[in-house]
Amino acid sequence: MGVQHYLFVSAVLASLGVIAMVSRRNAVSILMGIELILNAAALNFVAFGRYGRETAATPWLSGQIFGIFTIVLAAAEAAIALAIIIAIYHARANINADELQELRQ
Image (tube, rainbow, N blue to C red; front, top):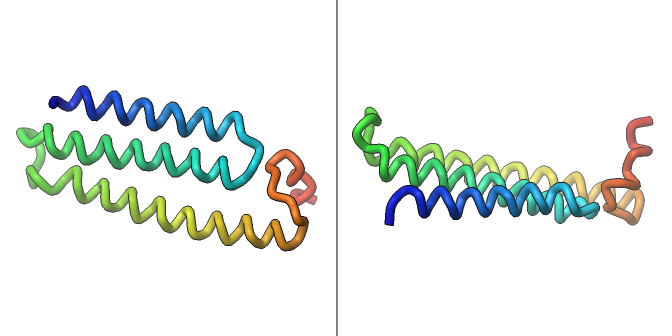
């Protein structure tokens, strides 16, 4: 299995994430789309870390370190976004993104 297979899976994950973000109105579904995109990026980092050993300074760690950083970033983003969504739900009893335009005022 070469890097092309991992890139194909990553492209499918990223496109599914973009479709989920654009087509959904629920804030939790939009958050899940963002998570799919971040997981696709982490998969790219790990795949290039595995197959790009000739050019890296630390051959077996460069992609894995960036992949772990991306996963930690996704976990922090999910925790903060879910806290914001819960606060909005308690205030409005609705989490549809289209109906939250009144928060700007």
